Length: 409
Image (tube, rainbow, N blue to C red; front, side, top):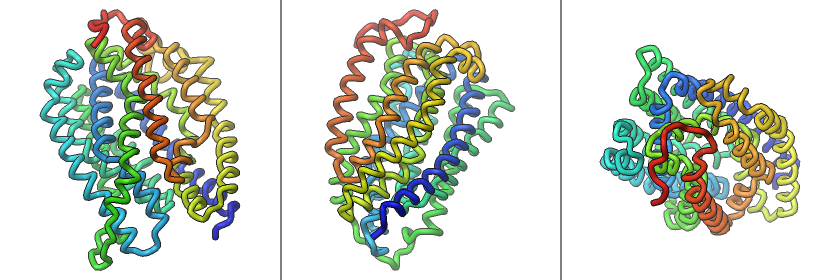
């Protein structure tokens, strides 16, 4: 039995490595998004943001929550056949569905761009992002394997290094030849291809997934039983996180407000850095402790992690809240400073969410996936209602000259 002190040391060692990786990823990704926002027109930048959002929604639905199932069940099995069966079960379900979703997005892109957003010029961008959907799902399954193994270095190399480096390299080439919305979307596609190739290489070399001599104990029913509530939970989370972007595009009848909102959004997400760093290791470690029946030790670990997350997040929150316009001007440029009030509102929301603790990971580690579904459903419904009520009147809390086209569905 592993002691609580050993578990805490494992958590903070892994969290420290991931914090470094996340800072590296955030730094590179932030620079990449900054370049894109500055090089593209506001409308083109908004089109790329919409393409990313649509692809993310499709990928979240297609992956069926199975990446979290892989992360939870791998530490609970001992034999190679059982572990291999978990991975193959998840892949055999999620990957084919992701291909279907990608094809569907490719086919409906012209209609979606014209009818939903009054922007038929973004249809080619949507079609590029349709190829991203299966790549996203495959990538998440690979990261789920790494998480289930409680290994942090491969995650840092695959997700926090290979993905942003490949993306910014492609963005640099696009900027050199002339940036357009379509070319930037191709750069984003390349940014997903590279980490998936690295991840498949990792599975081939460091796991028994490709070894047919090992055998496999398939767990389709068990994985789906755990993961299916997380499918709805994941979709509801996207409704909670991304519906604002889609509704801004819908109600405004264009992409300018989408661009302004999403220029300040990455600054607010800096408040999630510490939480994300610890969450990756926190869930499987807590799952292991729970499997041993050491519930009192789970409470101590939760308190320790929450304290450190609050300490790391507070200074960032103060800077964002006190100097929003200056921060925006120094990063994305003066053309986006109208979003200063939006940034302050987002910062408050992210800060409250962050310092509340790793509630979602705790619930997932003890198998309370239905509770997550109920919580996400309530939050998503409330968020949707607020979006529908407030966006037509206030937009993203910025002043935009383009008139709003729609006031209701």
